[in-house]
Length: 391
Ligand SMILES: *[C@@H]1O[C@H](CO)[C@@H](O)[C@H](O)[C@H]1NC(C)=O
Ligand SMILES: *[C@@H]1O[C@H](CO)[C@@H](O)[C@H](O)[C@H]1NC(C)=O
Ligand SMILES: *[C@@H]1O[C@H](CO)[C@@H](O)[C@H](O)[C@H]1NC(C)=O
Image 1 (spheres, rainbow, N blue to C red):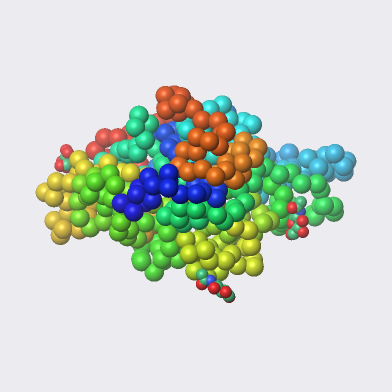
Image 2 (tube, helix red, strand yellow; image 1 turned 90 degrees about the vertical axis):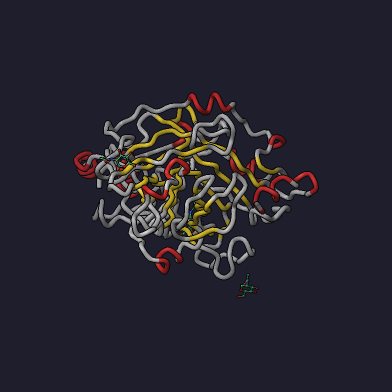
């Protein structure tokens, strides 16, 4: 309840900077993973993705042959191109989200980012699986994710800290000489063909100790629409009358150099001591304080609350699309895609929640819902399934 109360007494508060909260409708639910398995269709497990739609968002176009041919031709212009190819080899294909996107399912019309999580399934006592639908906290929106960007703790009504917004694509000038060990040993530091991206969580985690490293990937068993506490690191053990909310908070300290890293995590860190909420300082290795991104995903578990269908031993019946029945494998992905400096401008405004005063372009819920992407993977994910798709 605390979270909602905090948001609704804004009239009394003097806001320093923005705390934004908005909905992104469902884009697709299928086996795609643009960050961890960009070229792989289908990806290992089912995800639900929201945000921007671009022409060929989730495919790699890299060609080794092209790189080696180019490498042999020692012309500076071609070297440049080669360098770009190598960066792409390391960081994935060139991708300028705002430029290449045609529409977005988010209410901020200049936010072409993609946000995604795994998908929840119910495992009935007879061993079959059924996908759990999602509901939206914003009336009329289609499922999806409620996204927050904040400068200070969610309950902090002042939001006075300054944050640096995530960065878009940057192809920095060449630093010769080009080394001869491409593509495997090439190390580009701050050059990237893609904008900022990050991942949080550990798909393989199955214990509290493993999950606790991520601190802020939690579940709320909702008794009503306003329930926000308590949060647990594993799946709720009892039926939840108003569904299960998944809360995914990303780390907030950036190294200021890489827009991505091989594990999609090393360029980000939690504060050196304390927490983002307590205003803990960023470590020297990751000195730049970024907005905290929070996803709230509401899983409509009510239709699965009949205890007769739950496991006979009384344990809880939900399982992630990658086979985790503990909940500790919870993870979330973020690919930044705000147009130009739209996010920074928004974050610098004294406003809250949907920030009507911020001059940020918004779109109607109908327009969000209309933004669509053709399904790429044709397989049944909605019937009673004998196994999880891809598992
Ligand atoms: C398994 O249980 C579910 C939930 O009770 C039911 O809807 C489904 O038809 C059952 N499937 C089989 C194969 O018995
Ligand atoms: C690239 O990173 C280096 C440190 O590795 C830094 O000194 C330099 O200023 C960065 N360049 C840009 C343009 O950000
Ligand atoms: C973090 O550590 C610094 C000194 O190392 C200290 O001054 C500060 O109070 C600590 N902050 C928190 C939130 O614990």
